[in-house]
Length: 365
Length: 69
Image 1: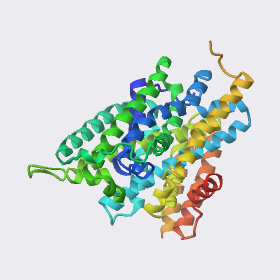
Image 2: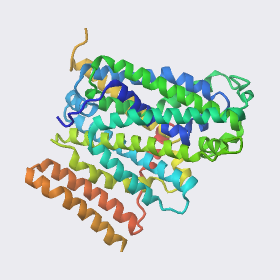
Image 3: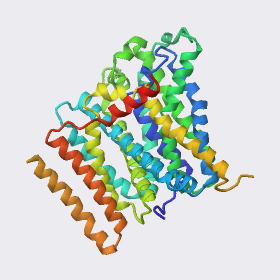
Image 4: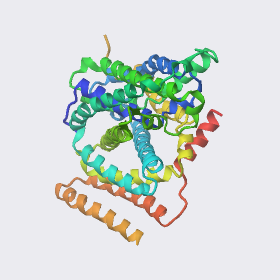
């Protein structure tokens, strides 16, 4: 076995929750996708059932191959062509890690430390992540068990501190443009759940197999709650028109906190949770890339691959983000939605059909 | 100078990883590591000496715009 560690369902929920929620703290891509008005929170609500629907192929495939990850069962379903699918997945995970690294560096160089070169942040974070990824899934689970409550408490505290500046009238009229844009918005938010691939890779290491359904439902539920809290706060503070012009809307909101003239400038708290969250996120996908590569080439140990993969992630991360505008265009709903849907839903459903047709895997009662 | 640092970094990584693997006779890992290091080295070298490397995001964008305009 490549990985001997086991992860409990609670740790997995926290881990996946962190990897998903971090982007909401800074970029919040949902605000620039349709419906582009005050109904974003409705799209967020609608994204929950759509997300569950997207997770169905992966879940059914895992039921058939309970001890294999997506890279392994694609090889046992279609044989040699499965290697190609595995290469595609490894590429996607590495690319996604590079995108996250680029987003992290761009946020720091744009908002906080404009004169530090991007390479410095990239190398230092990747080295830490390499060390964490080396220790395997068990350590990541425990780490996220500590970090997730910090993130939750910190973000709720910030929202409570901002409560006096909110103006809830911006949410009327509800459903201004009708129902279809809201549904489209829910679809694009759900299509960003790259973590479904992450769950598909980690599920074999879950220690209690009966809890897989709980993992899916509670991860999405937890993400939904915090997404709603943050979106509603930002919209209520800035209003719809101003939010669209801001690059880092939650960060600007945190800067506004001012209680009684002494509790001010708490954006370092926001920076703290962002760095912790991105650290977990990059570690997780970094680990998945290395583990997937190990499963793809039938290696005995994935640890020697960690540093070489890091040497690909750093230049790739710098290459794909010449400017923050181009990066935002790629991660916008027009491009990234279809790119991730291809890996998240399209390939797993084809694999599922072939598995049912060829009667591969464990039969269901 | 930059190229020199780059070569130093990559050979350092190779020196950490390779002798252990040769001792353990894990030839599969060794091949994969060399391929990965080669890709990483080419990517970083081209960017360091200022060659314009094609952006993979642009390619993906182009493909998706063909299918879904």
